[in-house]
Image 1 (cartoon, rainbow, N blue to C red):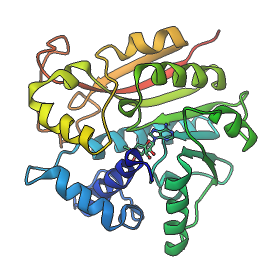
Image 2 (image 1 turned 135 degrees about the vertical axis):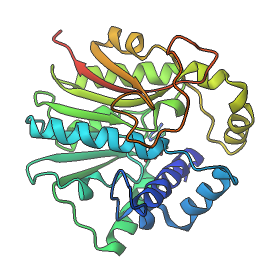
Image 3 (image 1 turned 30 degrees about the vertical axis):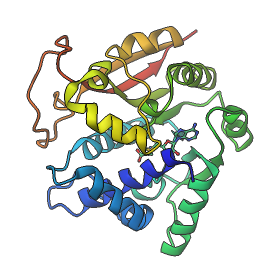
Image 4 (image 1 turned 30 degrees about the horizontal axis):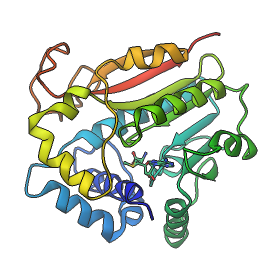
Length: 273
Ligand SMILES: C[S@@+](CC[C@H](N)C(=O)[O-])C[C@H]1O[C@@H](n2cnc3c(N)ncnc32)[C@H](O)[C@@H]1O
């Protein structure tokens, strides 16, 4: 498995830990199985004795709420881009006429299916696995697996963009724009360039790079990233209203103060051509 795919086991381990809290923001009963011992070990190493960050719990819950709202509004296709060990097809109670498409590397998705089978897990909706590299012809593979460009869709790029380089992010957004009908949604988390430049993060980023999981992309202007691709983005930061959930412990800092590390949660709508 590619090192970047191991990050999916790590985020699953964080959802498992969150699910065990009495004040949990989500209940992901499959997360522990999907993370496996490798994911739990990675989480332990990454935390390295520090207070665990609520980032993954907050972003997952933030996107969960929006996904549920959009499917209640009629969207019937959800595309998890860089799906990793995401178990939303099993845990959100999505209706039987909703299809969740999961795109990720073949090795990771093979391991996921093994672990799901062992757990006897059954999705509440239709689930389609699209095993491919996002550098390749993934959009063709998605269409071949039944995705319709004329339906309202919700694309989720959670924990993904930071692992692509700038050209890869631009290519991905171009592909998403061609697949998304007007009114479709794109949910994504975006690391700020301010975060990548932060001296507080230097050692951590170096460790990620050594492990083959380098963070390559960041911007403090997600709105400007998405606008040329035909998306209008609503952007919040962790700890802002709607992305706090009583769990964010960081200071409140002005968004324009880029001496601080910022990260963003994006809820974007595809505009008419
Ligand atoms: C941090 S994980 C996030 C997984 C999941 N969305 C979550 O939030 O738990 C990043 C995922 O992106 C996938 N990924 C990264 N680059 C990719 C590429 N070029 N093609 C396909 N998947 C990729 C990895 O395999 C991994 O599963």
